[in-house]
Structures are given as C-alpha cells and as structure tokens.
Length: 149
Image (tube, rainbow, N blue to C red; front, side, top):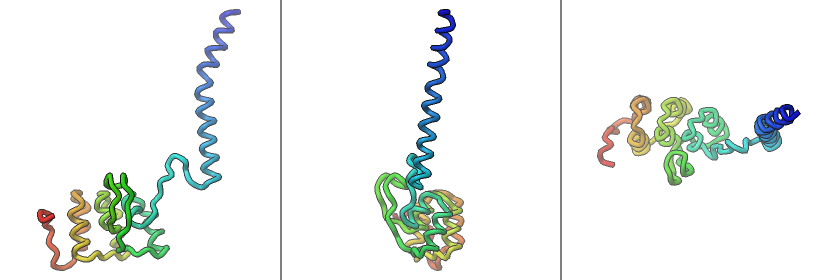
C-alpha cells in the first residue's frame, strides 16, 4: 500500500507544475484577447520613426497611410536603438537598426531626406547593405565621408 501512496504523491509532484503553467498561459491568452495587447510583448511603435527602428514594415506602412510625414523626425524610446531616448527621422532610425528592407521601403513610400539627413543616416549605420540602399538614393553633391562626425 505504501508503494501506491508514494506513486500517487510522485505523480502529483510531477504533474502539478505543468498544469499550473498551462493555466497561467491560458490566463495570459485570455487577457490578450480581452485587452487587444499582449501583456508580455506589449511594446508597440508610437510613431513612424519607432516603427522603422522596430524593423516593422507593416507598422511603417500603416503610419504613412494614417498621414504621418515620412521625413519628419520623431522620438525613439531609449533601449530600442540607443540606450537613451533620441530623435531620428524614419530613414535614420531604419539605418541605425541596420535594416536595409525598411530603408528601401521608406524610399519606396516616398522618403527623400535632405543632404544632411541622408548623411546622418549613412553615417549612423555600419551595415554595408543599408549603405548600398542609401547610396542608390543619395542626393546630388553629398559625400559619403563620415570621418568629420
């Protein structure tokens, strides 16, 4: 009889933690369904520059369709690209995030940075593929020299 009791206790000790974890996850998913945001991954882009920094092409398109200006600098929260909060244009944010696809998307959507903004975006990124996309859209007369910064 002691073997049966020990076996039952062992089964209980082994099965309770996964059951509690499953119930907690079901509760998390229910909370997600009710609020519309995920309680664990709730960080969403607040503006076009942040969407570019998050490498979220869908959000970039949504912000442009909603009327946000594609060349306007906006605040990017600390911890996304840099440790401190910074103000960047969407092209600069995508270049800093080293995402050539979002940089290209921004140009496809009509981004046309001024020479100073293009130069900042070029120098903020050390990714060769990002720089190639930027070179394809370089304003006339802008040099690629980042040593002056």
